[in-house]
Length: 303
Image: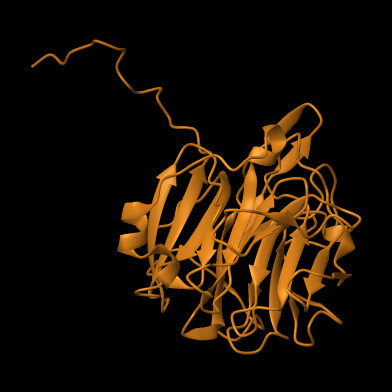
């Protein structure tokens, strides 16, 4: 089956977990060559569970006096903000009911608008459920819960590049049970109401979501077919795949064209910003290789 897609898909199939912690640097000047040459890494803390960072986002607005703002979201512990390139951080989410974070996204057209999806999306035994999505209109000073409370684990938030009232949310859903509040949700009124635009079934959630920066009506979503039990994690299934819409979520098509099928686990997606026709997918291939016909180790042929 040929891939009839405007996006050329490059696939990397790996055996390990395809988790995708992205530094969403909307302002590409943050990582220029001179800065990288002069930059040295140091541990800014915190420790133990807080070391696990779920997401980092950098507003598109220009830096003031070469000082950039960044939002850093650990798995648990809320959201931290720096306005001086990471020299100091302040917690900006501590007053909320739930401090487990899956994603933080700043509106490209208005850096005062910040969205947080609660409930980390790593589906491990130490993954804490969230209570939906939160919105700030004053750069993190105050927050309002905007719903999707039963989604439990928010994996990705995508905001329209010019209209901050249009938002897409990728929701994993319950980890240990089935539920219907999972898939891709869309709002056109800043979160006052939501429409479920991509839904497979009560067991399959959406683990990643990206949009074409040239045409925000084009999005790709990664579904995740998994079952989490108290004693076992079934880490893949046939419903894990990549879906594409070209009409802002009204219709979706599952992509093929060389993508693996069968027992597929987590999929991570990203678009190459210099050439958005290129979509990268990191695929967790859970298929068992048939080695029954393979010769024993060290065996040689007769020739």
